[in-house]
Image (cartoon, rainbow over all chains, first blue to last red; front, top):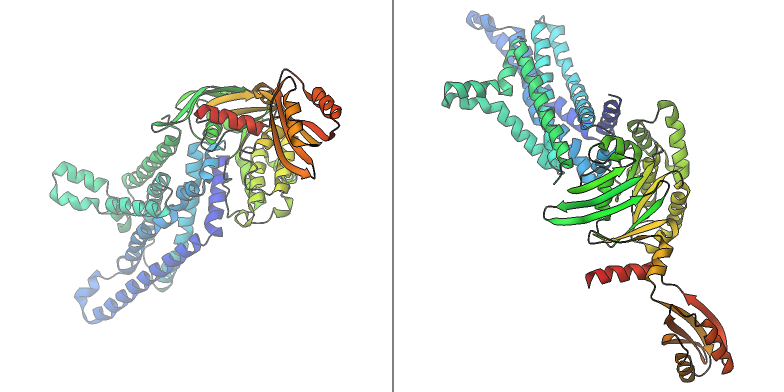
Length: 256
Length: 313
């Protein structure tokens, strides 16, 4: 635990002494801000149009019209941004050779992995903080429901954790950060769209594809529903990839 | 302290080291000699638990490097060849990080860091970013991080490579000072260095051990003839002829003149007979003037080259 904390501190410092964290957070904020303002503006136009149209009025509310879509778009943005946060975790050390020293320090593999995971996770949370202001703006102008905000962010955070676990695994496999990022992105995108195949397969495989899709489980959170099995899915997903990461680190010590 | 038994490592099909066996006593400084690609780094990486051997057994302080890797790593300070450090940290922050990971108690951390920084002469760069420092400083930070938790065993891969002569002397002095309580293994391909700091040397070539002994013993056991250097004023032809006649002299070589009428000669003789007395008598009897005479010992370098080339032949 003490060692995990030491690694976490170092990694976190490394994120914030290099420009990586700032640039990623900056880009993320700009794009999510643009999404938010577009969604908000569109909602405003719909409101104006609905003044003379009672049919339109029935479907309009701030929670479904602005809150939920804003948080949902965050999830897609995270999918694009996360590989750039995770790619350096092990690849950089492998490239510079400090990986060799790291492995000869009296550390357990789990401590190294959890420390790096924690640092990336905290950076990810810091990245989400500016988006709270969008919610603050909505709340200052209107009275949306609080529930979907909480469940939506919980979903995004769980989603982020599972993305990080995939990213860490990819970065243990190569010393090239670009390869690590591309592999991470590819795997994440595949898990994102994997349920599309459900339409063309038998019922059993279809169900499996739906259940392992990271998007499918997120939909419930977006609707404001917190299911234990959805939470469990993300936790298991993260745990599974972190376990593979541990195996990948151990493979350096397999006798050949 | 360190026991290595029949250690073998394959990279795919190619063997890097083949059946290496040796022991290192507590408090000893052992030098690892060998040409590039001989397997020095591989052996050190196995001993520091970075990677496992394909076959064989190695124990450090009684712990197996494969089975009890964590225990071994607690007791070993390792400096890899190219000193990979975190360039985005300052020297003191880095040492503090390593100290924390190596389990140095919070209260002792500050004192330990100051002590190793002082020992390694890096106090003046303690607040500088490692990435901005010169090779010499990085090398010394590499040794400092290995020393931080006062380990029983130090494994240093090429500790003086890439340093200027002044720094090399400092590092050598540092390593010598560290000896005694600690067991040190260091690799080098600078031979005078090995004979200067190491109590014993191991020569390996193409993954195989070819010799283990003290530098002095290696020199005496591999020396087949002794060589005497002479500076004589006198007619070269006569000198050559007369000296060759002395019992025990095998060969004479005349070198370039040092001044008018004076030459340097190398006289090789069998080990069994000391020919210096006869040389002097012959020279003075003929009325030549002897200005210098001393024996030339074989250097570790000669032996190294001899062993390594013999292996190939």
